[in-house]
Length: 450
Image (tube, rainbow, N blue to C red):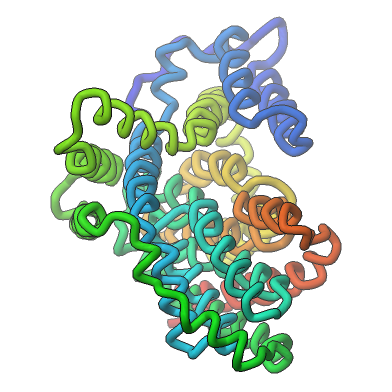
């Protein structure tokens, strides 16, 4: 994964076993991350710095531990999405979909869930809810119906939909980059269970809330009178953005045949779209536009990832993760099926309590260390898909289980319609248990029966 030869890894640090020191650094960093007392990027960068100052890693080794393909993929897609957002296409689709069901509140509940899941498969979850939720408030206010069920199903749909593709959720980006998996690998292996889970979840919400969501004909006409075309702010830019996005998706699909990393494809797409976006601009306007797009990149997340990679690499080089891998093999008696089922539930439960990104980043090198003992990469693939499903589906368990959940709760509070932590769990825990149970059955049937 890292390509750099590891030399001079100390066995002892400050008179203690290097494994103990590395593990202590990681535990302290993760506890602080869990409490959310400090910015997560600051915590990760400080943890990475301590790894170097303690002598566990040199700066060269720390840089070798950073997965730059993942960072490039994130930055490239953030630039593309940032420019797409300026066109108004996402609001257009939401209003267009609402009108296709004749502004029926029950139908809108269903179509907004589907739109959220589709957007989440190709954008990051946070961007998706930031775009969909304001439109949801606008529509529900005009219809005079409660917003709560719409927000709930959109949270669940964003986490489920993001599971379907390589770029839909950060855990998938991490797994795909570490294993050099293609866009089509995720689409082929995970989309069936995502679609099935979405059908069940939307069906539950339609059964429980749908029949009670009613509005007057006068209010529904207000939605029908909305002109979705007015959401489009720049048609010329929209054509360019959709063209580049299509090429990038085609590039992801063809990446394994082109032998080009996904990060390179995303960055190239971002650079081309930046060029097209600023093509006819004057010098000052061009620089201003580019600075605006760069400002839309979530640099907090990028630096969080960079620091996290270094922290986890400290565990890897000191042998902590290999030791944990051996314990895990012993626990599952070397059984791929037992390992897969255990991973999917551990991932789901942990991801519901803490951010799934550091958990997955830690699990990846541990699982890779287990591959030789469990028959190699091909034999281990069910375990990797279980990690993805557990981490992504588990994000639905609590309001802090995924970034999108926190964002929606914050937006709802600002609108005077707060979502309580316990109130959310009345729905989230059953939904998480149901969908993870479905994913468990899917993994077992798909890889160990058929």
